[in-house]
Length: 503
Figure 1 (cartoon, rainbow, N blue to C red):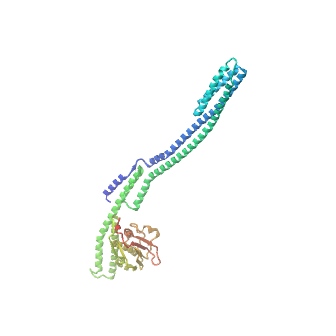
Figure 2: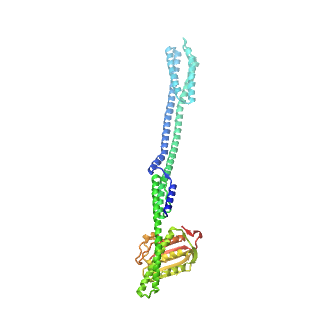
Figure 3: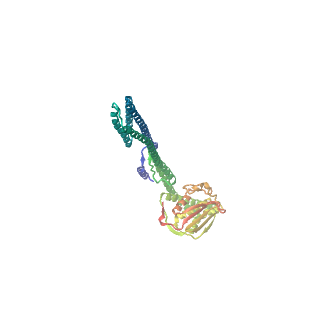
């Protein structure tokens, strides 16, 4: 990627980044306040309801109890008034009449206190009726009592019985009112209790929902950062990093984007170096190969046996160098560009024989035999890329095989798959490095048999091109005959033309 492209991606990621002003600490504080708000409202509501209920219960109970007590006092005053007037009728004593007047004044005061209470209309009507009846009776009694010879009619005295009955009804009504108000307060307490439970559930639910929402909002940028770091390590450096959220996390995302651009630039420079060095090595290698061939053909004169052995060694080194350079070039093409499959139908067994023939000289130098079991198998695939796959696996088996060893190649078709097994008698692959053998430039513990060390790209190219063909490679455990590496390839016999280009 060029610097211009990097700047363009950086501008694009900056535009797409959503910045939430404030630091993570400030947002945590704000979220705590907002989450606590429903609970605070519920507490205030609870206190308000309980306070109102307490005040109302105190007021209602005090008034109803007072009404009952004052009603009894009114009844007592009426009884005293009746006793006084009956005594006055018998004795005709002015002191007794004065006592009657005192009891009546006390009765009127009690009635006034009763009317001063905030009670319901029905009870007030009873109080008013009792007061009016007493007033009318008093108007009838006083003129007769003030005569020189008191003459009170029995009808007047009987009206006291009626007043007394009214007062008793008032007492009963007051006592009943205490019970009614107590039940009403109990019902109100039940409703308040239900309201408090409802408000508590609602407030706790809202607090939990808000807490979950804020946890999601605050942790999502952190998860995005973790995903971006993992993407950098596993996928590559092409996708821009844009982290939204609080200011400090956004700044961290900016630093990650800078790191991605830097790594992308380094990756680009690495691939440029591989391409340049590979092409630069091709020219002297071609000259070296041509010169080795001329010497081997005795163009400059006949060579003795020792010289022929040296020429064979040079020829083997040329093959090795050519494979290394080809792997570098193939890797550069596979990484920086789209893998386009040039599909055709051909015989896999003939391709395998051709690859084996290209390694005859190294095979003879190490006295390695090849045991092949090749059935005639057709496949629809990219001939050049499948050749690279087979050549890399075979050269890998050849490199790790000991002298006088044996390499096995088996080809067979099963269902709609072509299966190719390449196995050797080398040291094998340790369990701890099996997960890494298909990574770029991973070499593991290379043997000292060959003078030129590999690049660590052979198996990674195998994996790239197998993925492009929708195939897979499986590493089998060692067998009695082959104690080294055993690679089993699975390739579909027919390719879907829609998947001919793989990113």
